[in-house]
Image 1 (cartoon, rainbow, N blue to C red):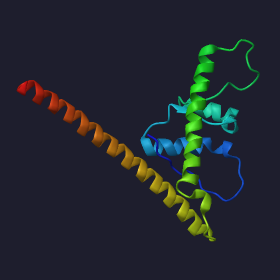
Image 2: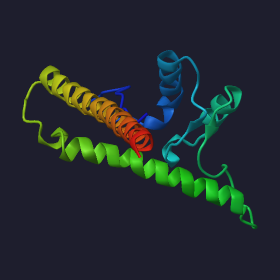
Image 3: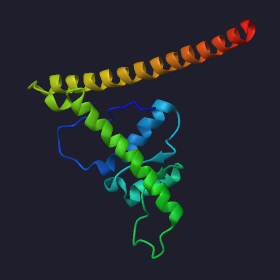
Image 4: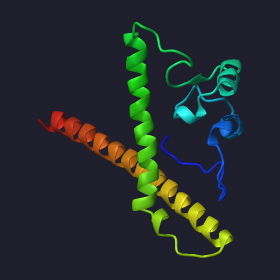
Length: 158
């Protein structure tokens, strides 16, 4: 879909790897189902998260835990590269919100106002994404209909 959500906003240092199950539950509450695939970095790849994902039918991206196999499976490697590309796009979304929406230029001092500004920047980014989607659908419909009508007009008059 291309929309970004803030599941946890914290000023404290913490290990994000223990939060995967909570994030998956948040996804299920939002959309009604667990995600088919979780594309995460190595920090999230631990035995507890693997058990949770296997129990709920979620595929956790990346290689299996333990020693890598001697023979590399080409199908698995292709799938890993696909997930790496998707992960790069996700990381690029963070860069976009920093550069284009000013997440790297927060100047307010209080915790509450900083958090409000962060949330507002994500809201604006998601609203602009929604607007781009709606405008692209509108223009596709407009130009597709225009071509269809003009070709019928030419057939009738020609």
